[in-house]
Image (tube, rainbow, N blue to C red; front, side):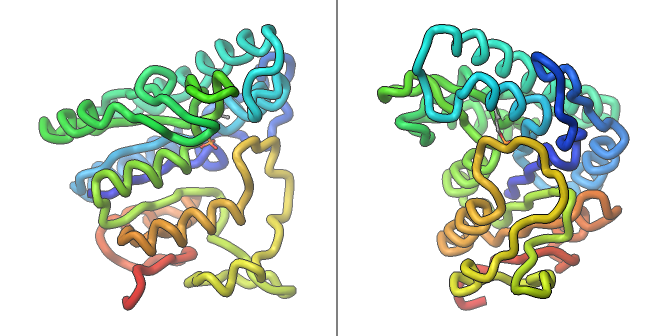
Length: 264
Ligand code: IP8
């Protein structure tokens, strides 16, 4: 079993500022279709997670959803973000269906409960039963209800990858992004493998990444190191480069930043 996240940076125009209500958000169907084809052709059992990109981060930031409830009008933002990320997810589903795949969408706004911003409960049974019937569960970065003081919080695609990988003892987690991997040191060279001491050497990402309410590259590196330590080999790779996702799913070592299991 492998968990694949199609990052918002690769399936949307994440840099777009977006107008009121995030209307600048654009889905990139061609890229999504090719990546889905790579998943389909690998014939691997996969849980798919889609990031929010410009469909979620712009409005989540505008309504200040990251730290939970402060004022009533934020619920308007909650509803808009939940609609927009679901819309994006369904566009990915459309592409998968056209490729003859059997995807089923599982929205965290109904299948997840959080506690102070962290996943507390996930409807694991649905994931399990869909997989047992050879359907591909597709979940996504979303807003979710929170049992704590926050009342609601952001459930990021990265947190879903980590949680689901642990629940299902995933062999591998693949973060598909728009960069080759993580850059380290003053010369900003690509780290082909990353281990805990390298955390301090991570270079800030260059370019306009757009709004991101769920932590940057360091948070992703930390999460990936944790996943590797608990037995799931993890990689961040560039989905704009044809074949890298397919290669990783088949057990190859394409260009990317790898987080190996201890002792490997
Ligand atoms: O794009 C964020 O998910 P991510 C979800 O996976 C929202 O970080 C609602 C911004």
